[in-house]
Image 1 (tube, rainbow, N blue to C red):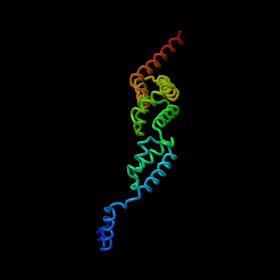
Image 2: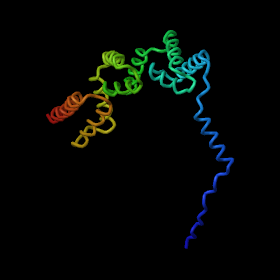
Image 3: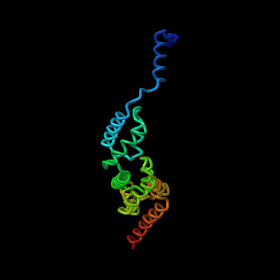
Image 4: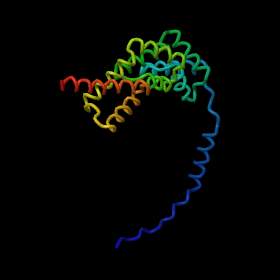
Length: 202
């Protein structure tokens, strides 16, 4: 039979612990010591350079990261962003096009997926649209979805049942292709299979 554990009341805090807790609360409530504006600008710029060296970022994405620090205010962030734009290290148009091109080269993805990715990275809508236009002029979505279907068929075989066809539809939707384009391209692929079978039978 399992022994019941004896109930032990939580030890009461000593007066010293209570005073320490009160001091901690006071310290947290105390306003932060103001930092010299020039120092704040220098530190913020230094941090911005480090963040950009780690990975490319959009202007708003970088601003958000800079303002995480208690010593960085809007003025210091604006200063750092302006300097980096001036040096050519920060450019939303170049960032959006570079990111979209890289994603398309990595694997076939549709416009909707890339638009969501750029929105997540805080790229302004107009800048994102312009980047997507350029990327899909270079490599049309028709070509990308055909590649995606070929790859899926190579891995899983042609869809033979309604469930398998639905699975292919869902896969292409997750890749960000439009519903109309998916329906058309999957129909083309399956009708081509039937034609191929008829030709083989003849």
